[in-house]
Length: 437
Ligand code: S3P
Image (cartoon, rainbow, N blue to C red; front, top):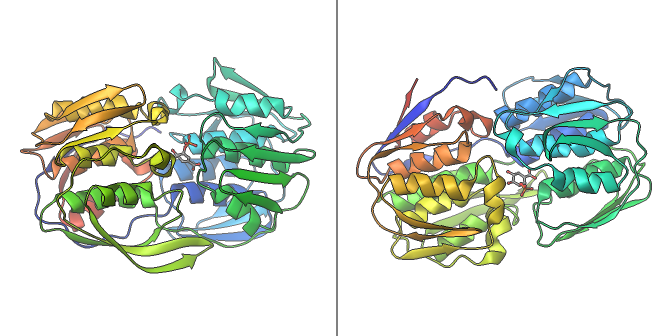
Protein backbone atom coordinates (compact mmCIF):
# COMPACT_ATOMS: atom_id res chain seq x y z
CA UNK A 1 0.00 0.00 0.00
CA UNK A 2 2.98 2.21 -0.54
CA UNK A 3 3.70 2.53 3.15
CA UNK A 4 7.16 3.58 4.23
CA UNK A 5 9.30 1.11 6.04
CA UNK A 6 9.04 1.51 9.78
CA UNK A 7 10.93 -0.49 12.40
CA UNK A 8 9.99 -0.80 16.05
CA UNK A 9 11.99 -1.29 19.19
CA UNK A 10 10.15 -2.84 22.13
CA UNK A 11 11.77 -2.84 25.56
CA UNK A 12 11.06 -4.39 28.93
CA UNK A 13 8.56 -2.11 30.62
CA UNK A 14 6.74 -1.20 33.77
CA UNK A 15 3.48 -2.95 34.76
CA UNK A 16 0.67 -2.28 32.28
CA UNK A 17 -2.17 -0.23 33.74
CA UNK A 18 -5.28 1.62 32.71
CA UNK A 19 -7.96 1.17 30.11
CA UNK A 20 -7.33 0.43 26.44
CA UNK A 21 -10.03 1.07 23.86
CA UNK A 22 -9.08 -1.01 20.82
CA UNK A 23 -10.39 -0.15 17.32
CA UNK A 24 -13.41 -1.64 15.57
CA UNK A 25 -13.63 -5.20 14.32
CA UNK A 26 -12.04 -5.78 10.95
CA UNK A 27 -14.31 -8.65 9.88
CA UNK A 28 -17.47 -6.76 10.81
CA UNK A 29 -16.25 -3.51 9.17
CA UNK A 30 -15.59 -5.23 5.81
CA UNK A 31 -18.99 -6.90 5.79
CA UNK A 32 -20.85 -3.78 6.89
CA UNK A 33 -19.38 -1.81 3.97
CA UNK A 34 -20.18 -4.48 1.41
CA UNK A 35 -23.76 -5.17 2.49
CA UNK A 36 -24.52 -1.46 2.94
CA UNK A 37 -23.14 -0.82 -0.57
CA UNK A 38 -25.61 -3.19 -2.25
CA UNK A 39 -28.55 -2.41 0.04
CA UNK A 40 -31.48 -0.12 -0.80
CA UNK A 41 -31.06 3.14 1.12
CA UNK A 42 -28.50 4.73 3.42
CA UNK A 43 -26.71 2.83 6.18
CA UNK A 44 -24.67 4.37 8.96
CA UNK A 45 -21.73 2.38 10.32
CA UNK A 46 -20.38 3.30 13.75
CA UNK A 47 -17.18 1.95 15.29
CA UNK A 48 -15.79 1.35 11.77
CA UNK A 49 -12.15 0.26 11.66
CA UNK A 50 -10.04 3.02 10.05
CA UNK A 51 -7.44 0.45 9.03
CA UNK A 52 -5.65 -0.14 5.76
CA UNK A 53 -7.64 -3.30 5.02
CA UNK A 54 -11.08 -1.79 5.49
CA UNK A 55 -10.11 1.52 3.85
CA UNK A 56 -9.07 -0.52 0.81
CA UNK A 57 -12.51 -2.17 0.70
CA UNK A 58 -14.18 1.24 1.00
CA UNK A 59 -12.04 2.55 -1.87
CA UNK A 60 -12.94 -0.46 -4.04
CA UNK A 61 -16.65 0.08 -3.41
CA UNK A 62 -16.28 3.78 -4.21
CA UNK A 63 -14.56 2.80 -7.46
CA UNK A 64 -17.63 0.65 -8.20
CA UNK A 65 -19.86 3.72 -7.88
CA UNK A 66 -20.89 3.65 -4.21
CA UNK A 67 -20.92 7.00 -2.41
CA UNK A 68 -19.43 6.61 1.06
CA UNK A 69 -19.17 9.58 3.41
CA UNK A 70 -16.99 9.75 6.51
CA UNK A 71 -18.78 12.23 8.83
CA UNK A 72 -16.29 11.49 11.62
CA UNK A 73 -13.48 9.07 12.44
CA UNK A 74 -14.95 5.60 12.86
CA UNK A 75 -18.17 6.56 11.13
CA UNK A 76 -19.32 5.87 7.58
CA UNK A 77 -22.53 6.81 5.80
CA UNK A 78 -22.97 4.44 2.87
CA UNK A 79 -25.44 5.37 0.15
CA UNK A 80 -26.53 1.93 -1.02
CA UNK A 81 -26.96 1.38 -4.76
CA UNK A 82 -29.08 -1.77 -4.53
CA UNK A 83 -28.19 -5.33 -5.54
CA UNK A 84 -27.72 -4.41 -9.21
CA UNK A 85 -26.50 -0.83 -8.87
CA UNK A 86 -22.71 -1.31 -8.87
CA UNK A 87 -20.84 0.04 -11.90
CA UNK A 88 -17.80 -1.68 -13.39
CA UNK A 89 -14.36 -0.10 -13.24
CA UNK A 90 -11.74 -0.40 -15.98
CA UNK A 91 -9.01 -0.03 -13.33
CA UNK A 92 -7.94 -2.95 -11.13
CA UNK A 93 -9.54 -2.97 -7.69
CA UNK A 94 -6.78 -2.84 -5.08
CA UNK A 95 -7.54 -4.85 -1.92
CA UNK A 96 -4.20 -3.95 -0.34
CA UNK A 97 -3.18 -6.51 2.29
CA UNK A 98 -6.70 -7.84 2.88
CA UNK A 99 -7.54 -11.48 2.24
CA UNK A 100 -11.02 -10.85 3.60
CA UNK A 101 -11.55 -7.95 1.20
CA UNK A 102 -10.39 -9.90 -1.84
CA UNK A 103 -12.18 -13.17 -1.13
CA UNK A 104 -15.51 -11.60 -0.17
CA UNK A 105 -15.39 -9.20 -3.12
CA UNK A 106 -14.69 -12.14 -5.46
CA UNK A 107 -18.03 -13.61 -4.35
CA UNK A 108 -19.82 -10.29 -4.60
CA UNK A 109 -18.44 -9.49 -8.06
CA UNK A 110 -18.99 -12.97 -9.53
CA UNK A 111 -22.68 -12.17 -10.04
CA UNK A 112 -22.30 -8.70 -11.62
CA UNK A 113 -22.92 -7.76 -15.23
CA UNK A 114 -19.39 -6.29 -15.61
CA UNK A 115 -15.82 -7.63 -15.48
CA UNK A 116 -13.49 -6.76 -12.58
CA UNK A 117 -9.88 -7.32 -11.66
CA UNK A 118 -8.97 -7.74 -7.99
CA UNK A 119 -5.35 -7.22 -6.99
CA UNK A 120 -3.39 -6.88 -3.77
CA UNK A 121 -0.01 -6.13 -2.22
CA UNK A 122 3.01 -8.46 -2.13
CA UNK A 123 1.66 -10.50 0.81
CA UNK A 124 -1.89 -10.84 -0.57
CA UNK A 125 -0.46 -11.78 -3.99
CA UNK A 126 0.92 -14.97 -2.41
CA UNK A 127 -2.33 -16.14 -0.80
CA UNK A 128 -4.37 -19.06 -2.17
CA UNK A 129 -7.54 -18.10 -4.03
CA UNK A 130 -8.70 -21.45 -5.46
CA UNK A 131 -10.55 -22.06 -2.21
CA UNK A 132 -13.00 -19.38 -3.40
CA UNK A 133 -12.67 -19.56 -7.18
CA UNK A 134 -13.31 -23.35 -7.38
CA UNK A 135 -16.66 -23.35 -5.56
CA UNK A 136 -17.63 -20.06 -7.26
CA UNK A 137 -16.94 -21.78 -10.60
CA UNK A 138 -19.34 -24.55 -9.67
CA UNK A 139 -21.96 -21.83 -9.13
CA UNK A 140 -21.33 -20.74 -12.73
CA UNK A 141 -18.81 -17.95 -12.10
CA UNK A 142 -15.79 -17.41 -14.34
CA UNK A 143 -12.71 -16.19 -12.50
CA UNK A 144 -9.16 -16.31 -13.86
CA UNK A 145 -6.24 -16.50 -11.44
CA UNK A 146 -2.47 -16.57 -11.83
CA UNK A 147 -2.03 -20.24 -10.95
CA UNK A 148 -4.46 -19.95 -8.06
CA UNK A 149 -3.00 -16.63 -6.88
CA UNK A 150 -4.10 -13.00 -7.31
CA UNK A 151 -4.77 -10.99 -9.36
CA UNK A 152 -8.27 -12.34 -9.95
CA UNK A 153 -10.07 -11.50 -13.14
CA UNK A 154 -13.79 -11.88 -12.53
CA UNK A 155 -15.88 -12.19 -15.69
CA UNK A 156 -19.24 -10.47 -15.55
CA UNK A 157 -22.51 -11.48 -17.15
CA UNK A 158 -22.50 -15.08 -15.89
CA UNK A 159 -25.69 -16.53 -14.52
CA UNK A 160 -25.07 -18.08 -11.14
CA UNK A 161 -26.93 -20.95 -9.55
CA UNK A 162 -26.96 -21.92 -5.91
CA UNK A 163 -24.98 -24.94 -4.78
CA UNK A 164 -24.76 -27.15 -1.76
CA UNK A 165 -21.11 -27.04 -0.74
CA UNK A 166 -19.23 -28.71 2.08
CA UNK A 167 -16.15 -26.59 2.78
CA UNK A 168 -12.94 -28.64 2.85
CA UNK A 169 -11.32 -26.19 5.30
CA UNK A 170 -12.98 -24.12 8.02
CA UNK A 171 -12.95 -20.63 6.47
CA UNK A 172 -15.34 -17.78 7.14
CA UNK A 173 -13.96 -15.96 4.12
CA UNK A 174 -14.87 -18.79 1.75
CA UNK A 175 -18.27 -19.25 3.37
CA UNK A 176 -18.95 -15.52 3.09
CA UNK A 177 -17.82 -15.31 -0.55
CA UNK A 178 -20.24 -18.09 -1.47
CA UNK A 179 -23.11 -16.51 0.47
CA UNK A 180 -22.50 -13.16 -1.26
CA UNK A 181 -22.48 -14.89 -4.66
CA UNK A 182 -25.62 -16.72 -3.51
CA UNK A 183 -27.47 -13.38 -3.31
CA UNK A 184 -27.14 -13.22 -7.11
CA UNK A 185 -27.75 -16.94 -7.75
CA UNK A 186 -30.88 -18.80 -8.80
CA UNK A 187 -32.12 -21.15 -6.11
CA UNK A 188 -30.56 -22.10 -2.81
CA UNK A 189 -26.96 -21.71 -1.67
CA UNK A 190 -26.29 -24.14 1.18
CA UNK A 191 -22.92 -24.07 2.94
CA UNK A 192 -21.74 -26.74 5.36
CA UNK A 193 -18.57 -26.17 7.41
CA UNK A 194 -16.20 -28.79 8.84
CA UNK A 195 -16.10 -26.63 12.00
CA UNK A 196 -18.20 -23.54 12.74
CA UNK A 197 -16.51 -20.24 11.84
CA UNK A 198 -17.36 -16.61 12.52
CA UNK A 199 -20.97 -15.96 11.46
CA UNK A 200 -20.91 -12.19 10.86
CA UNK A 201 -22.05 -12.44 7.24
CA UNK A 202 -25.04 -14.54 8.26
CA UNK A 203 -25.99 -12.26 11.17
CA UNK A 204 -25.57 -9.15 9.09
CA UNK A 205 -27.54 -10.47 6.10
CA UNK A 206 -30.39 -11.11 8.52
CA UNK A 207 -30.02 -7.57 9.93
CA UNK A 208 -30.24 -6.19 6.36
CA UNK A 209 -33.50 -8.12 5.96
CA UNK A 210 -32.34 -10.98 3.74
CA UNK A 211 -34.00 -14.27 4.73
CA UNK A 212 -31.27 -16.68 5.83
CA UNK A 213 -31.25 -19.84 7.91
CA UNK A 214 -28.12 -20.45 9.89
CA UNK A 215 -26.75 -22.36 12.82
CA UNK A 216 -23.15 -23.11 13.84
CA UNK A 217 -21.61 -24.99 10.90
CA UNK A 218 -24.37 -24.37 8.32
CA UNK A 219 -25.91 -21.46 6.39
CA UNK A 220 -28.61 -21.43 3.69
CA UNK A 221 -30.16 -18.67 1.64
CA UNK A 222 -32.10 -18.13 -1.59
CA UNK A 223 -31.04 -15.63 -4.24
CA UNK A 224 -33.02 -12.76 -5.67
CA UNK A 225 -34.23 -10.88 -2.60
CA UNK A 226 -33.52 -7.33 -1.44
CA UNK A 227 -31.17 -5.89 1.19
CA UNK A 228 -32.64 -3.01 3.18
CA UNK A 229 -30.28 -0.39 4.59
CA UNK A 230 -29.71 -0.55 8.32
CA UNK A 231 -27.31 0.96 10.82
CA UNK A 232 -24.40 -1.15 12.02
CA UNK A 233 -22.61 -0.88 15.37
CA UNK A 234 -19.13 -2.42 15.06
CA UNK A 235 -17.74 -3.91 18.30
CA UNK A 236 -14.08 -3.51 19.30
CA UNK A 237 -11.95 -6.19 17.64
CA UNK A 238 -11.19 -9.15 19.92
CA UNK A 239 -8.15 -9.91 17.75
CA UNK A 240 -6.71 -6.47 18.58
CA UNK A 241 -7.56 -6.88 22.27
CA UNK A 242 -5.67 -10.20 22.16
CA UNK A 243 -2.23 -8.51 22.23
CA UNK A 244 -3.14 -6.70 25.44
CA UNK A 245 -4.61 -9.85 27.00
CA UNK A 246 -1.27 -11.59 26.52
CA UNK A 247 0.81 -8.53 27.43
CA UNK A 248 -0.91 -7.90 30.78
CA UNK A 249 -0.89 -11.63 31.55
CA UNK A 250 2.90 -11.87 31.23
CA UNK A 251 4.10 -8.53 32.67
CA UNK A 252 4.20 -8.75 36.51
CA UNK A 253 2.02 -6.25 38.34
CA UNK A 254 -0.23 -5.52 35.35
CA UNK A 255 -3.98 -4.84 35.47
CA UNK A 256 -5.63 -3.66 32.25
CA UNK A 257 -9.21 -2.98 31.26
CA UNK A 258 -10.45 -3.48 27.69
CA UNK A 259 -13.96 -2.03 27.35
CA UNK A 260 -16.69 -3.10 24.90
CA UNK A 261 -14.82 -5.91 23.17
CA UNK A 262 -16.70 -8.15 20.72
CA UNK A 263 -17.17 -11.59 22.29
CA UNK A 264 -18.71 -13.59 19.47
CA UNK A 265 -17.97 -17.19 20.56
CA UNK A 266 -16.39 -17.91 17.17
CA UNK A 267 -13.67 -15.38 18.04
CA UNK A 268 -12.82 -15.93 21.69
CA UNK A 269 -10.79 -19.15 21.58
CA UNK A 270 -7.75 -17.27 22.93
CA UNK A 271 -9.68 -16.31 26.04
CA UNK A 272 -10.27 -19.99 26.77
CA UNK A 273 -6.69 -20.92 25.89
CA UNK A 274 -5.19 -18.23 28.15
CA UNK A 275 -7.49 -19.22 31.00
CA UNK A 276 -6.41 -22.85 30.57
CA UNK A 277 -2.81 -21.57 30.87
CA UNK A 278 -3.69 -19.91 34.18
CA UNK A 279 -4.52 -16.37 33.02
CA UNK A 280 -6.67 -14.08 35.15
CA UNK A 281 -9.23 -12.55 32.78
CA UNK A 282 -12.69 -11.47 33.88
CA UNK A 283 -15.66 -10.32 31.81
CA UNK A 284 -18.10 -7.73 33.14
CA UNK A 285 -21.12 -5.96 31.80
CA UNK A 286 -21.90 -8.57 29.12
CA UNK A 287 -24.45 -7.16 26.72
CA UNK A 288 -25.55 -7.06 23.10
CA UNK A 289 -24.46 -4.30 20.79
CA UNK A 290 -25.56 -4.26 17.15
CA UNK A 291 -26.59 -7.90 17.39
CA UNK A 292 -23.18 -8.99 18.71
CA UNK A 293 -22.22 -10.01 22.26
CA UNK A 294 -19.77 -7.54 23.84
CA UNK A 295 -18.26 -7.19 27.29
CA UNK A 296 -15.65 -5.30 29.32
CA UNK A 297 -12.53 -7.40 29.92
CA UNK A 298 -10.11 -7.06 32.84
CA UNK A 299 -6.81 -8.87 32.65
CA UNK A 300 -4.33 -9.15 35.50
CA UNK A 301 -0.86 -10.62 35.54
CA UNK A 302 -0.80 -14.33 36.40
CA UNK A 303 1.86 -17.00 36.05
CA UNK A 304 1.12 -19.00 32.91
CA UNK A 305 1.84 -22.67 32.26
CA UNK A 306 2.00 -24.62 29.01
CA UNK A 307 -1.00 -26.50 27.59
CA UNK A 308 -1.97 -28.98 24.93
CA UNK A 309 -4.29 -26.74 22.97
CA UNK A 310 -7.55 -28.54 22.15
CA UNK A 311 -7.73 -28.77 18.34
CA UNK A 312 -11.42 -27.92 18.35
CA UNK A 313 -10.54 -24.41 19.58
CA UNK A 314 -8.29 -23.59 16.62
CA UNK A 315 -10.87 -21.96 14.29
CA UNK A 316 -12.14 -19.81 17.18
CA UNK A 317 -8.68 -18.27 17.65
CA UNK A 318 -7.26 -18.55 14.14
CA UNK A 319 -5.88 -14.98 14.15
CA UNK A 320 -4.55 -15.17 17.72
CA UNK A 321 -1.77 -17.75 17.34
CA UNK A 322 1.09 -15.25 17.04
CA UNK A 323 0.03 -13.79 20.40
CA UNK A 324 -0.50 -17.25 21.89
CA UNK A 325 2.99 -18.32 20.78
CA UNK A 326 4.48 -15.42 22.76
CA UNK A 327 2.49 -16.41 25.85
CA UNK A 328 3.65 -20.02 25.40
CA UNK A 329 7.29 -18.97 24.99
CA UNK A 330 7.34 -17.41 28.47
CA UNK A 331 5.03 -19.89 30.20
CA UNK A 332 6.21 -22.69 32.50
CA UNK A 333 6.47 -25.97 30.58
CA UNK A 334 5.62 -26.74 26.99
CA UNK A 335 2.67 -25.88 24.78
CA UNK A 336 1.54 -28.08 21.90
CA UNK A 337 -0.47 -26.71 18.98
CA UNK A 338 -1.93 -29.08 16.37
CA UNK A 339 -4.53 -28.83 13.61
CA UNK A 340 -3.55 -25.28 12.68
CA UNK A 341 -2.11 -25.72 9.17
CA UNK A 342 -4.21 -22.73 8.04
CA UNK A 343 -1.66 -20.53 9.83
CA UNK A 344 0.70 -21.23 6.95
CA UNK A 345 -1.51 -19.28 4.49
CA UNK A 346 -2.26 -16.13 6.50
CA UNK A 347 -0.64 -12.71 5.89
CA UNK A 348 2.59 -14.68 6.38
CA UNK A 349 3.30 -18.34 7.19
CA UNK A 350 2.64 -17.67 10.84
CA UNK A 351 4.11 -20.94 12.09
CA UNK A 352 7.38 -20.27 10.29
CA UNK A 353 7.58 -16.54 11.03
CA UNK A 354 6.81 -16.95 14.74
CA UNK A 355 9.22 -19.88 15.04
CA UNK A 356 12.00 -17.90 13.34
CA UNK A 357 11.47 -14.79 15.47
CA UNK A 358 11.10 -16.63 18.77
CA UNK A 359 14.25 -18.66 18.06
CA UNK A 360 16.12 -15.42 17.42
CA UNK A 361 15.05 -14.35 20.91
CA UNK A 362 16.35 -17.62 22.32
CA UNK A 363 13.15 -19.66 22.62
CA UNK A 364 13.04 -23.42 21.97
CA UNK A 365 10.30 -24.01 19.43
CA UNK A 366 9.79 -26.93 17.12
CA UNK A 367 7.71 -26.42 13.98
CA UNK A 368 5.35 -29.16 12.85
CA UNK A 369 3.39 -29.17 9.57
CA UNK A 370 0.20 -28.08 11.36
CA UNK A 371 1.43 -26.42 14.53
CA UNK A 372 4.35 -26.16 16.93
CA UNK A 373 5.76 -27.38 20.22
CA UNK A 374 6.94 -24.42 22.27
CA UNK A 375 9.09 -24.77 25.38
CA UNK A 376 8.49 -21.96 27.80
CA UNK A 377 11.50 -20.10 29.15
CA UNK A 378 13.17 -16.71 29.08
CA UNK A 379 13.42 -14.51 26.02
CA UNK A 380 16.45 -12.39 25.15
CA UNK A 381 17.12 -9.33 23.01
CA UNK A 382 17.26 -9.60 19.22
CA UNK A 383 16.13 -8.39 15.85
CA UNK A 384 13.13 -10.12 14.25
CA UNK A 385 11.26 -9.83 10.99
CA UNK A 386 7.54 -9.01 10.70
CA UNK A 387 7.30 -10.51 7.18
CA UNK A 388 4.82 -7.72 6.34
CA UNK A 389 2.39 -9.32 8.78
CA UNK A 390 0.64 -6.96 11.21
CA UNK A 391 -0.04 -9.61 13.84
CA UNK A 392 3.56 -10.86 13.82
CA UNK A 393 4.79 -7.30 14.44
CA UNK A 394 2.41 -6.67 17.35
CA UNK A 395 3.15 -10.08 18.88
CA UNK A 396 6.87 -9.34 18.99
CA UNK A 397 6.14 -5.92 20.49
CA UNK A 398 4.49 -7.89 23.31
CA UNK A 399 7.47 -10.27 23.51
CA UNK A 400 9.76 -7.24 23.95
CA UNK A 401 7.99 -6.39 27.23
CA UNK A 402 9.48 -9.44 28.92
CA UNK A 403 12.68 -10.01 26.94
CA UNK A 404 16.09 -9.60 28.57
CA UNK A 405 16.81 -6.59 26.33
CA UNK A 406 15.40 -4.62 23.40
CA UNK A 407 13.56 -6.44 20.63
CA UNK A 408 13.85 -4.78 17.25
CA UNK A 409 11.05 -5.61 14.81
CA UNK A 410 11.74 -4.93 11.16
CA UNK A 411 9.15 -3.28 8.93
CA UNK A 412 6.01 -2.79 10.99
CA UNK A 413 4.23 -0.47 8.54
CA UNK A 414 1.52 -3.09 7.98
CA UNK A 415 0.26 -2.84 11.55
CA UNK A 416 -2.03 -0.04 10.37
CA UNK A 417 -3.95 -2.56 8.23
CA UNK A 418 -5.79 -3.77 11.32
CA UNK A 419 -4.65 -1.61 14.24
CA UNK A 420 -4.02 2.05 13.48
CA UNK A 421 -2.69 3.82 16.59
CA UNK A 422 -1.28 0.66 18.17
CA UNK A 423 1.98 2.31 19.24
CA UNK A 424 0.23 5.20 21.01
CA UNK A 425 -2.31 2.97 22.75
CA UNK A 426 0.38 0.51 23.80
CA UNK A 427 2.66 3.21 25.18
CA UNK A 428 -0.33 4.81 26.90
CA UNK A 429 -0.76 1.74 29.11
CA UNK A 430 2.93 1.16 29.84
CA UNK A 431 4.66 -0.40 26.83
CA UNK A 432 8.07 1.04 25.93
CA UNK A 433 7.63 0.86 22.17
CA UNK A 434 9.59 3.16 19.94
CA UNK A 435 8.94 3.65 16.24
CA UNK A 436 12.23 4.05 14.34
CA UNK A 437 11.62 5.63 10.96
C1 S3P B 1 -11.82 -13.66 8.42
C2 S3P B 1 -11.68 -15.02 8.44
C3 S3P B 1 -10.43 -15.70 8.79
C4 S3P B 1 -9.46 -14.76 9.51
C5 S3P B 1 -9.37 -13.41 8.85
C6 S3P B 1 -10.73 -12.75 8.81
C7 S3P B 1 -13.11 -13.08 8.02
O1 S3P B 1 -9.82 -16.15 7.60
O2 S3P B 1 -8.19 -15.35 9.57
O3 S3P B 1 -8.47 -12.57 9.54
O4 S3P B 1 -13.33 -11.87 8.22
O5 S3P B 1 -13.94 -13.83 7.49
P1 S3P B 1 -10.17 -17.59 6.94
O6 S3P B 1 -11.55 -17.55 6.45
O7 S3P B 1 -9.18 -17.73 5.82
O8 S3P B 1 -9.95 -18.59 8.04
